[in-house]
Length: 299
Image 1: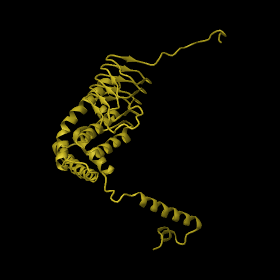
Image 2: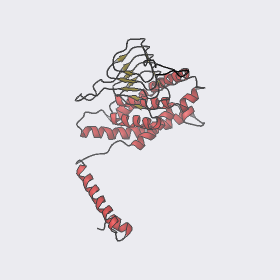
Image 3: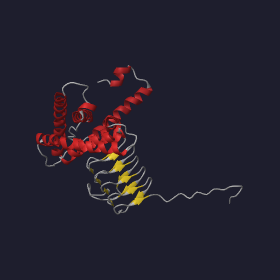
Image 4: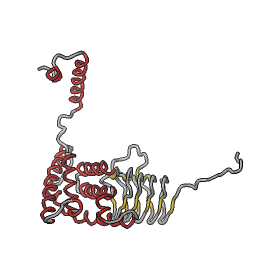
């Protein structure tokens, strides 16, 4: 059978022959890399639509409908989202079965997720209220809901975390990655985050897999709640910080390891923390020494 390039371009030149040979080499290499049965994986495109419809169902007035019957709109969004989610969950569960894992029934899992939606909405309401109270630039609740990237990151995380707890980590991770792509805020779906979380500005924030955040935690841009380098440590081992209630961490701070940041503490910008802090701590960088030379004085 003629090569596709020959069918498209006619008699190949020397340069086109090189392209054709490269095509063949790539196809051969990919064939060697394939497993016997790779199987289907959950779809990023489908889960993007699922997440969009779930968010519209949770906040129909501001992020969904322009008018009409609210109940009918929410029902339509949920039917679409949960129907598509069932298919993606089934795909992941089939993948897990091929990996030898015990799995629950798909319909039961999605049903339990649907039951968690009122709790997700309540948590998001607390996040929105915290953002409105905590940011002098916020003029209204609708502005916070529509415009704040930290809130949209938490929408994705609250949905993804619920699915992660129910046993579909791949689906959950895709949803969290959709949130990261939209907002620049990277939250692992396994991270546990209490109500009233406000991520201000948000760009570059990273919250690792085993991090635990209490109530009313406030983070600014480029904060990292990460792990130290751990070689040979079993996957899932607790290795990220525990941040207790009412903690504020300012921009550029890095908090590493399974340490505890005590309740009510404040960590200043650019600080590097690798050990426990007692409640009420206030940690800042060393003060800058300023020297001025006048009237020709100097070294």
